[in-house]
Length: 205
Image (cartoon, rainbow, N blue to C red; front, side, top):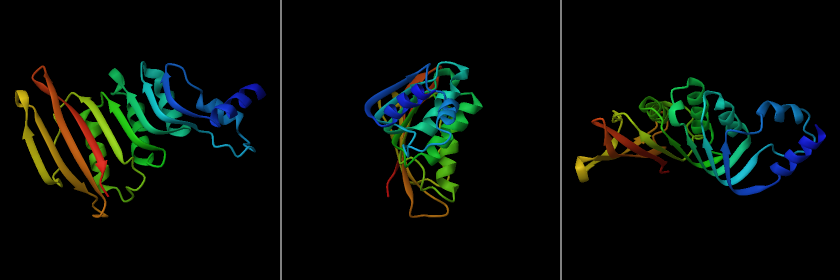
C-alpha cells in the first residue's frame, strides 16, 4: 500500500504532454482509500496538455469517473463509440462539461446522441450558474438531425457541396444575458439518408 501511494504521489507531481486512457486505469476508489488522510497536500490530479479516452465496453464508466475526479488537461477528448446510450456514461460526461471549466479548456466528444447535445444547449440557456461550464465543447459524428434553438440569435445558414448544411448562431443565458455562446453545426456527410454532423460550442465573452 505504501509503495502504491508513493508511486501515485510521483504521478500526481508530474505534468504530461499527452496521456491516453485505454481499458485500464487507476481505480478512483483505490485512490480514495490510499489517500484517505492526505497529509501531503498534494492535489490528487493527473496533469496533461492533452488527454484522450476511449470507451470500449459497458464497464468503462469508471474511466469517466477517474477523468471527472482526477484529471486536469488543457484538451480532453472522449470517444464513446457504441456506448453513447449508457445512462451512466452520459451522466458523468454531462458533469464534466457543465462543471469542468476550471479543469478543461476544450472537451471533444465523438459519437454522442442528439438528445445529449440538446441537453447541453438547454443548460446554456437555462442554468442559473453557467460559469463552471467548459468554454469550448466539440461534438463529432452525431448521427441524428439537430434542432435549432428557439432562442437562437444572429443565425447564419449556408449550404455547401452535396447540399450539406452548416448553421451558426449565438445563445445567451436566460438569467445572465451577458454570457453568450457561439454554436456552429455542420453536416459533414450523409449516411442512410440522414446527416452526420459536427458541432462546436464556444463561450464568446
